[in-house]
Image (tube, rainbow, N blue to C red; front, side, top):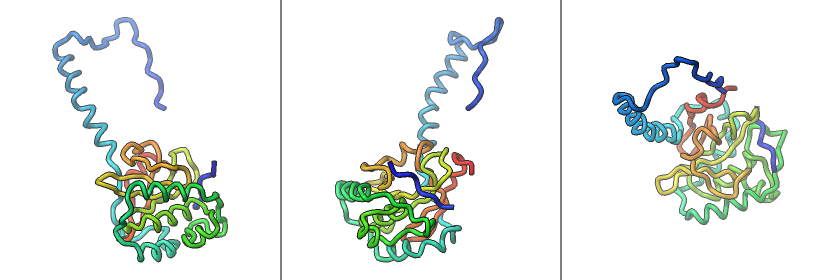
Length: 209
């Protein structure tokens, strides 16, 4: 498996002791509270599962490295590929050999060069896929794949039929639901698309640099 790209438990509860005032489900008030908790729980899960698509900002620390990205996105439209066609492009990108460019740790390689070499790092693969998808609204994301990672990663966040999807040609051959990945994988810190730069506030909730 290719390595990710570089850029730059709560303590256990003690057992109840003798005389512990553990709640009894038979008390009417406690039954009401239990029912209320069961009703609220799905709402709490739903709110946690919202995809953070970013807040528009005037710039990010990586803007000066995004020249190739800006040139690609300037030529994109609103995308006319079907979900199956996007899946096919994702699989092509996944087959490209992983090759980290240590000379350009922050700047993504131009898609034409990535395609000619049939290789690239996560930045190169993500930008190549952005060109293939052709949708200027797709977010080119930079962040962490997992909270435990000490290196950064790049992928696409793309909206299709009202649903945000993860397109990661470095690790995945299939699109992933961004909503289901919330709090688990793909923690975006910054992103870019044809409209500008974005910061993702939820990054700090999960990743502690």
